[in-house]
Length: 255
Length: 256
Image (cartoon, rainbow over the protein chains, first blue to last red):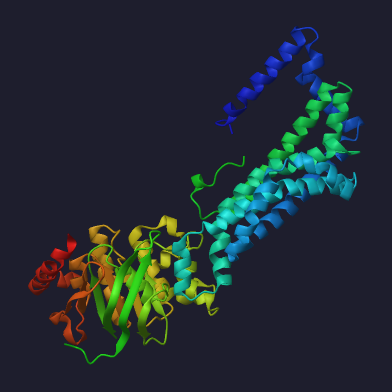
């Protein structure tokens, strides 16, 4: 613990400088708020403005979208291993869908699923699904031939090869996509709320910025960051459990 | 010569070529005939890239794009041990060993049931290790156990000792030889190491540069009649060095 204490040093220095700057220079509180002010807003947000409700809404949207997008994406990506032609056919569509700014899809999702929670879940799912497909497909086709060869010596079926070799050896890629997709899912849910919503952190941020309440805007940002950290920690724990056969140093990041 | 043995692999008129992008095919085998016998360890020696491994892949049915006939008089499976380690890194030593059994669904999950086998290979203490944690020699032992637990009739060895250090290699040679002979298996060993071929086998087949022909086919007389003789002992024998120089002289023009 003490050994790692230096890691928070940049944060502490940053907070102190920020506080000093916005206190000493007149008028800067309006633009930059201040750590102290943010703490007060934080308290007010949860005590008086139903902050927990908004947090839970955004968290639910993110996590459901994350789960839907990733499970569909990983499943499709891995299954493409069975059919090379199918994979070739789907490539341009995936490229096109992956390159499309997710922002552009938000109005469509809102028309289809309403301004409630489902349009945001779909936004989060859409922002994650392409990465999940592409990463897990790459994992599947990059499975080491040596392992497949051994399976063929045992006259294993394609289904057995899939289960015994393809799935476990693509896990590195799958976890990589999960890690990348935490941010993507948050982004999707946030964009959905940003465009049309009645609750959620995105809604709070856009409303607070309209009122020039910079303190509350920062509160929203901090909550989003905490969510991302929390989700990374969960992915990290799951990864550690499933990848324990790997060298400790090869299992990267996630903290 | 011990030719009364039953043929286990009969290859007739084998033709195999690799097509590259420039339409000119690389011919590996052109009308190759070779018969391999039961209860023998046959070594196949030849210059690098002459198609030794391809031959094993064809015998193992990993490579099916060839012309000619390959008869396999094998009722049980054909085992195959590769030069590079092919153990699944996400499975423990024990799980790797029972991989083949598991695919056929007759396996219990308890290492204790296979304790005797695991001990025979000196792997019982390592049953829960991941391959990552093992030395190269240990990995090859696991690979041997992985094949042998399925009771194959024939085992193919593609330079299984080539990435080991010298002493590890000698130890593995003895172990492999003992296990193959005690289980009355036939084996085909592909190697570029003439000494190793002589130390381990009953018969040595020397192949030429591609397209590959048999340029020498010798039965090592000190092992005729299925005589059991550990590789380490053979390595010290005068008659072994006679075979060595004989085979080396045949192979030498092919190495250029």
